[in-house]
Length: 115
Image (cartoon, rainbow, N blue to C red):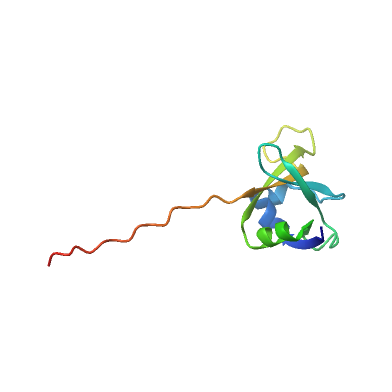
């Protein structure tokens, strides 16, 4: 199984947690969501301190799906400090890739045959 590297911006992966998340200093595990999460690979900030991106080290098929937007990222984290304020800093512990839900195609308006 070939391992590919895909880099995505931290803001894209973290969403609203972007401002609160500390820099990742080691590899964090990446799982595929399911009844029993499957370990797919890992993510890190190997592009450097100022690159502001996560590098995902995953198999080819998972990289294709992630880059095509077929997965959403669910992050697990711990609080970095023990203070009680609402906007505490967080430290990532893992990322889980969850398949996007399909949607029903809207039904167009039907023209009546009378007229």
